[in-house]
Image (tube, rainbow, N blue to C red):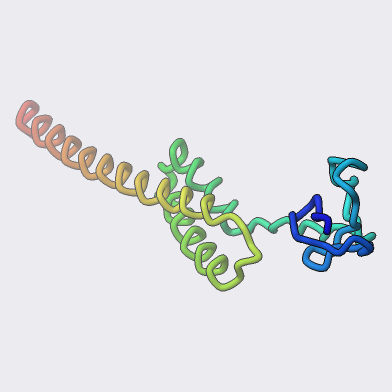
Length: 141
Protein backbone atom coordinates (compact mmCIF):
# COMPACT_ATOMS: atom_id res chain seq x y z
CA UNK A 1 0.00 0.00 0.00
CA UNK A 2 1.26 3.48 -0.82
CA UNK A 3 0.45 6.93 0.56
CA UNK A 4 -0.74 10.00 -1.32
CA UNK A 5 2.00 12.66 -1.26
CA UNK A 6 -0.60 15.45 -1.15
CA UNK A 7 -2.98 14.43 1.64
CA UNK A 8 -1.26 11.38 3.20
CA UNK A 9 -4.21 9.03 2.61
CA UNK A 10 -3.60 5.29 2.06
CA UNK A 11 -4.02 4.17 -1.59
CA UNK A 12 -3.94 0.82 -3.31
CA UNK A 13 -0.74 0.05 -5.21
CA UNK A 14 -2.39 0.11 -8.67
CA UNK A 15 -4.48 3.30 -8.05
CA UNK A 16 -3.82 6.16 -10.46
CA UNK A 17 -5.65 8.81 -8.41
CA UNK A 18 -6.12 9.39 -4.70
CA UNK A 19 -9.65 8.52 -3.60
CA UNK A 20 -9.59 11.26 -0.90
CA UNK A 21 -8.15 14.35 -2.61
CA UNK A 22 -8.37 13.27 -6.26
CA UNK A 23 -4.75 14.12 -7.09
CA UNK A 24 -2.60 12.04 -9.38
CA UNK A 25 -0.94 9.16 -7.50
CA UNK A 26 2.83 9.41 -7.44
CA UNK A 27 5.50 7.68 -5.49
CA UNK A 28 7.28 9.78 -2.92
CA UNK A 29 10.55 9.18 -4.81
CA UNK A 30 9.17 10.51 -8.12
CA UNK A 31 8.42 14.13 -7.24
CA UNK A 32 8.37 15.46 -3.69
CA UNK A 33 6.64 18.68 -4.78
CA UNK A 34 3.12 18.96 -6.15
CA UNK A 35 2.87 19.94 -9.83
CA UNK A 36 2.24 23.54 -10.81
CA UNK A 37 -1.44 24.44 -10.97
CA UNK A 38 -4.35 22.14 -10.39
CA UNK A 39 -3.37 18.53 -11.20
CA UNK A 40 -6.94 17.68 -12.20
CA UNK A 41 -6.73 20.03 -15.17
CA UNK A 42 -9.39 22.46 -14.03
CA UNK A 43 -8.46 26.13 -13.87
CA UNK A 44 -8.28 27.69 -10.41
CA UNK A 45 -11.38 29.59 -9.30
CA UNK A 46 -11.43 33.19 -10.44
CA UNK A 47 -10.79 35.81 -7.79
CA UNK A 48 -13.64 38.27 -7.50
CA UNK A 49 -12.41 41.66 -6.39
CA UNK A 50 -14.81 43.55 -4.15
CA UNK A 51 -16.32 46.74 -5.50
CA UNK A 52 -15.86 49.69 -3.19
CA UNK A 53 -19.05 51.53 -2.37
CA UNK A 54 -19.09 55.02 -3.90
CA UNK A 55 -20.86 56.54 -0.92
CA UNK A 56 -18.08 55.22 1.34
CA UNK A 57 -15.46 56.95 -0.80
CA UNK A 58 -17.49 60.17 -0.80
CA UNK A 59 -17.88 59.98 2.98
CA UNK A 60 -14.14 59.59 3.53
CA UNK A 61 -13.26 62.39 1.09
CA UNK A 62 -15.80 64.76 2.65
CA UNK A 63 -14.59 63.81 6.14
CA UNK A 64 -11.04 64.77 5.15
CA UNK A 65 -12.26 67.95 3.42
CA UNK A 66 -14.20 68.90 6.57
CA UNK A 67 -10.90 69.18 8.44
CA UNK A 68 -9.92 72.18 6.32
CA UNK A 69 -13.08 73.60 4.71
CA UNK A 70 -15.81 73.26 7.32
CA UNK A 71 -16.39 77.00 7.48
CA UNK A 72 -18.92 76.74 4.64
CA UNK A 73 -22.02 76.16 6.80
CA UNK A 74 -20.52 72.90 8.13
CA UNK A 75 -21.64 71.25 4.86
CA UNK A 76 -18.68 68.86 4.41
CA UNK A 77 -19.15 67.38 7.89
CA UNK A 78 -22.90 66.98 7.51
CA UNK A 79 -22.49 65.36 4.07
CA UNK A 80 -19.73 63.06 5.37
CA UNK A 81 -22.08 61.87 8.12
CA UNK A 82 -25.01 61.37 5.73
CA UNK A 83 -22.94 59.52 3.12
CA UNK A 84 -21.23 57.42 5.82
CA UNK A 85 -24.53 56.25 7.28
CA UNK A 86 -25.96 55.52 3.82
CA UNK A 87 -22.82 53.63 2.74
CA UNK A 88 -22.77 51.47 5.87
CA UNK A 89 -26.42 50.58 5.28
CA UNK A 90 -25.77 49.65 1.65
CA UNK A 91 -22.71 47.57 2.57
CA UNK A 92 -24.68 45.74 5.27
CA UNK A 93 -27.37 44.84 2.73
CA UNK A 94 -24.91 43.83 -0.04
CA UNK A 95 -21.82 42.05 1.35
CA UNK A 96 -20.20 41.96 -2.11
CA UNK A 97 -19.41 45.66 -1.67
CA UNK A 98 -16.34 46.82 0.20
CA UNK A 99 -15.52 50.10 1.88
CA UNK A 100 -16.99 49.66 5.34
CA UNK A 101 -13.82 51.05 6.92
CA UNK A 102 -13.83 54.08 4.64
CA UNK A 103 -17.46 54.77 5.47
CA UNK A 104 -16.73 54.47 9.20
CA UNK A 105 -13.68 56.75 8.93
CA UNK A 106 -15.68 59.37 7.03
CA UNK A 107 -18.49 59.11 9.57
CA UNK A 108 -16.10 59.58 12.50
CA UNK A 109 -14.28 62.50 10.84
CA UNK A 110 -17.60 64.15 10.00
CA UNK A 111 -18.92 63.83 13.57
CA UNK A 112 -15.67 64.95 15.22
CA UNK A 113 -15.17 68.04 13.06
CA UNK A 114 -18.85 68.96 13.16
CA UNK A 115 -18.55 69.09 16.95
CA UNK A 116 -15.18 70.90 16.82
CA UNK A 117 -16.41 73.59 14.43
CA UNK A 118 -19.78 73.97 16.19
CA UNK A 119 -17.97 74.55 19.48
CA UNK A 120 -15.63 77.01 17.75
CA UNK A 121 -18.60 78.94 16.36
CA UNK A 122 -20.29 79.11 19.78
CA UNK A 123 -17.05 80.30 21.42
CA UNK A 124 -16.60 82.84 18.64
CA UNK A 125 -20.11 84.17 19.19
CA UNK A 126 -19.49 84.56 22.93
CA UNK A 127 -16.17 86.31 22.31
CA UNK A 128 -17.81 88.55 19.70
CA UNK A 129 -20.63 89.44 22.07
CA UNK A 130 -18.16 90.24 24.84
CA UNK A 131 -16.11 92.38 22.47
CA UNK A 132 -19.22 94.25 21.35
CA UNK A 133 -20.25 94.93 24.95
CA UNK A 134 -16.77 96.20 25.84
CA UNK A 135 -16.81 98.38 22.72
CA UNK A 136 -20.14 99.90 23.81
CA UNK A 137 -18.85 100.50 27.35
CA UNK A 138 -15.59 102.07 26.17
CA UNK A 139 -17.09 104.39 23.54
CA UNK A 140 -20.42 105.03 25.31
CA UNK A 141 -22.47 104.09 22.28
